[in-house]
Length: 568
Image: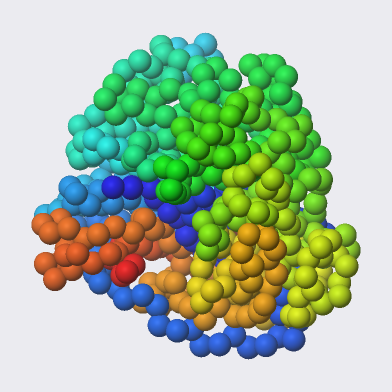
């Protein structure tokens, strides 16, 4: 059972999605200028009906009182389903911005816990405990949450941090939320309670859980600041209840490849969460990343794959006999992993997506600027047979204009004329690429969203691109509105009680699962493939610890509710 949490939320005036394989986030860096992906201001079509809502429930405390979440700004909150045990877990900040976890068991009963953190003095001596509460002008949308359930059924929680000591909790009794315990109680932890005995958890950000084909639990996180950081992957042993770094003392990514213990350098990596994909050779993890330098520019899109998260290989290695693994850590200078070189305006951490084409070959999609400074959507696919020695990356501009030499040399000329013009702006990013490529009707579907500069409405759009087999060529055949409603209207509609505030609906979703009998759902739903969507309302993404004024959000927060939605 894969308990990986998937978060999808709609920002006020923006779309941000965090999927399996989505990148760890930070404030986007954009190019200066204006972007308009619908210059003719064509009206958006009426959306089709979304997936069926099978059941819905409010999130409550043990007494049945409605639980509300902080609504000042958007935050990645989380929901995960342990279907075999019939337990739904949600992690959120309550109306007072205090970290809270709620659980509903198969009998319908809810319970809540306020996880506490260990307080240390300047000498790292333990001085007490406290709840975790976000403070105005000292926190923002970076303080996201991640939860997962391991193979023993124990809940894990991490997050509520940005460039600070890592915060992590685990159920010591699987399925018992009351046993959710701070890291200091973990066997094998160092004297101050770090997850491992390493000292790489003191300036941490973006802890994110993920799982592979065997269901084993892993976590990826950054240690360091934006442009001077190391990145680590930990793996969890459910039998010993211990975490360990897959690369030992060394990080997996290092800012300059020098003394990673004391000098992370002048770059920081922004990797996607590793994506596991089963294949004929037994399956592998895929990860892509960009580097951000001291000038706050993103550069050098890279990619590698691994079976065990320890040994990594470039795209053109055969998985049956890959040869000698790449030396670690990854650094900005490593050419074997390079996909798209150079500093590009519009190359944004958090918008590089790892997907797969009809042949099962990895396909990276991402925005960056062309030589004219126009923001375009690009696709990188292997030429030839995937994972073979002669394979290289083929980079294509999905928005290519016929006879436009700005497209990559050797590409066939697309017959579709791009409507795009301009670029994104630093102050108001207007284009988002939220999810990996999907497949449909023999085409590669690349979705994006754009803020219409006339109406200031978010428009959901998609490219339908060619699938040209092993050539690796990808070119857009059609750029159109995306009329498919992924979130049912019942969930996406605003609440009338909060209508006077500039909020938007936000979502967090589980991975799809098969509804089992006796797990709290109606008997007639047994055997249905479904997912759970948690819904709330909140303001837009904020960074640099700048909160909106109190009049822009309800002090009582917004209601949390979960929906069982068809995913078949």
